[in-house]
Structures are given as structure tokens and as C-alpha cells.
Picture 1 (cartoon, rainbow, N blue to C red):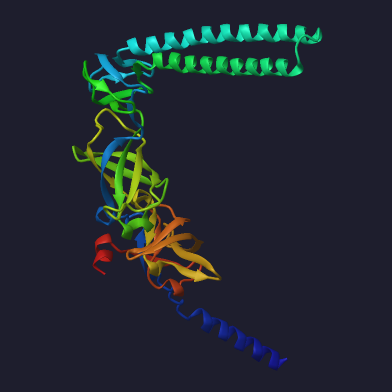
Picture 2 (cartoon, rainbow, N blue to C red):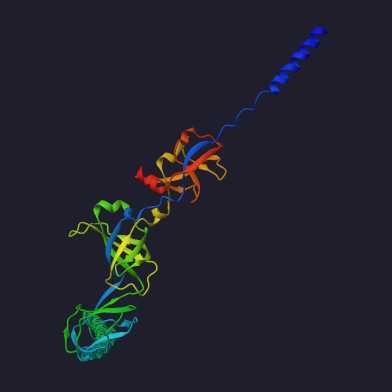
Length: 364
């Protein structure tokens, strides 16, 4: 009984001594160097800019399909024309006479065919009465076939002559604007000689050349910005439409066509324009390489929330550059990301974020 009382007394004493101990101090939040996502965007000086000329996608050099003497010009440089509109006329006298002669040949061929056909019918009747031999009939039938072939030939020649009678009028083959005319009344033109140039003003693009050393930076359907030298303040949206598969022998560069996506009346044909690449990369989030770590084959960053809690997040990274790593998916502009000591952070750890300024990162 006495032993039990002694043990109880010792227990009480120990409990009282434990209550008298001062409380342990809370561990202060660990300092963490962070950056605000979205501050590091692509510099304008890092973008590739190629100089080119504003052109139309479709430029039609139109010419006559027959030779002749120009008698009338109904268009001027700068005129807006519609498809089918008459632009230039040549003297149609010769073509009309040719068509008339061809039609007359058809009539003569038809008469010869009718006569030959009648002869064959008579020869067949004579053969039935045994007045002529089979060879005589065969000869007459062969003659009928020759006459029939000549009739077809005459009809074909007449069709060509009639078509050529319509070729005396040069008409616009598309809607557009006239940029060049090489035709004056009294001038004799030859077949295929360029008379009028029409360009389509609805599909405008920039023709530029890509150096061999920059070919890996450009591909079809890339989005770009287009700036006219006449108006540097406005940027037009463009898309790479085509890239030549072979380099030019003169410049050793690859020709490229960039289509305007929002052309307006300020864009004039022949203007000088700059094609600025890097539009997509300017909108991507970029973080320093020290902010990304690999965990079981996944790319991980540490996001610090408003309460200073560190949380792991998987991200989809893109290309590597001197200024950092492009993040395609997983981060939002304005979030804080740890950029130093990420290997020592623990999920849910309380940290004291210190934001590193853009100027500080550039000076490193």
C-alpha cells in the first residue's frame, strides 16, 4: 500500500514538472525564391523578321488567242474589272471571213456527201440486177466514206473558225484590278503576247525569302505578324501559306508566301513589308530551367499559392532556350513558381516567397 502511494506521488510530481516546461517554438516558414508566371515573355529583338513585297496570290497576264490589229481599248491601268468584262478588241474582219469560208466548205461537203450517197444507192440496185460487179460497188462505197470524212473535217474547221471569231474580244478572266496594259489602237499583236495584267485584290500576301540558316524556324501555317514600312504602328495577322521546296539559284534563299488574314485598304500592292515570326512563342509561358525537375519521368514545378503553401504540379514543357524552358500546358499567368532549391521542397510545406524581378533574371 505504501509503495502504491509512493508511485502515485512520483507520477503527480512528474506531471507538474512537465506542465512547467516552456512550449516549443514554431518552425518559421522557409524562404523561397519565386517568379511570377508570365513576366518572362519573348523579347522583340529575339524575333526573326524577314523583309518582303506585298503581292497578289493570283496575277493573270492575259493575251489574245489569235493575231490581229487592235481597234479599241476599253480599260485603263488601275481600273477595277469584273470577270467577263471586255477590255480590248481587235479587228474581226479576217476572222469573220474565215468563219464564212469554213461554213461554205461545210455546204460543199454536204452536197458531195449527198451525191456520193445517192450513187451508192444506185450502184446497189444495179448490183441486184447483175448489171455491175461487186468490186464496182465496193469502190463507190469507199468513195462515200471519203466524202463523209471530208464533211466531218469541214465541220471541225468551221467550229475552229467560228470560235476564233469570238477571240477578237479580250475579256477579264477574274475579278480584280488592272496593273499593266500593253495595247494601243492600231497596234498589231501576236498570239500569246501579254496585253493586260489583272491581279486579285481579295487575296493579298507577302513574298519574302528565308535564309538557309533559318529554315528550321519556319513551317507552313505558322502565325506571324506583318508590318508595312509605310505604317509601322499597325500589325496585321498573317499565316505562312507556302514555302518553296528548292532555294533560288540567285539568292540561295527559299521563297515564302505569307497570306494576310485581316487585310484592309491601307495595304497596297508592291509595298515593302516585314514578316515578324515568334508570335506563338511570345504567348507561351517561360520559366527558368532551375524551376523544372523530373520525377518518375514527369516534368514537375513547385507552385506557391497565396498562403505560401508549396504544391507539386505536372507541366508539359516545350523547347529549351537560353532564357529558360517553354511551358505549353500546366501553368497560368500570374501564378508563383519556385525557381531555386526545388529539390528540397516538400508537398504542403509552408514557405516565405521572395519574388525575383525580371531585371534580376536578365542580369544573371
